[in-house]
Amino acid sequence: MKKNTYEPQYEDLYEVLENHGRAEFGIMANQSWNDDPKRTLFTLSRYKFVAKMLNNKNHALEIGCADAFGTRLVQQTVKKVTASDIDPLFISDAKERMNKLWPLDLEIHDFVKEPLLKNQYDCGYSLDVLEHIDKENEDAFIRNIKSSLVENSPLIIGIPSTESQKYASKQSKIGHVNCKTGEELKVFLENHYKNVFIFSMNDEVVHTGFFRMSNYLFALCV
Image (cartoon, rainbow, N blue to C red):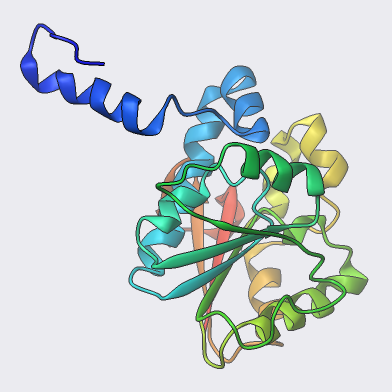
């Protein structure tokens, strides 16, 4: 598929097209790209934060990958990723779009019920999932994630803040049954981890500012 572009360096674009094909959005990323493109940026920025924090880890476990569109950012810095979701339709979509040059293990799993594999992964992360877990199940959810990880492995939890919910979409509000303030998130996770570090996020910017003005919260648990 050799193309003679006006500037020769851009001929590489067609080489990538030939080797990889044309990438497709996942079903969730497709909706955000069409309904609210900036939301796609914010979502990918969350994955970039995770990728930087878990750089050079051997095997990461993602809990709640949805269509796994953003997972590739973590694949870029971690040797192996196993991505899981409770919804078989999301996992099916991710498998259909799998790129052989970016291999990914995909699992259907409910962490409220049990660990995936005990002591298997040396780090974990879960973005936009805890707010979907009923309060009576949240401790079991964290315990089963922790049991899936090797002892002393870091876990990153990302969640929209309670304060952000008055600006949330109708679709989001239906599933968000357990949002937390920064203070509440820290107290909850300290029941499971000795050290919990909370970061704030507004749009694509991660910072250490005032929790109550944050749209999104990260907890780094170690």
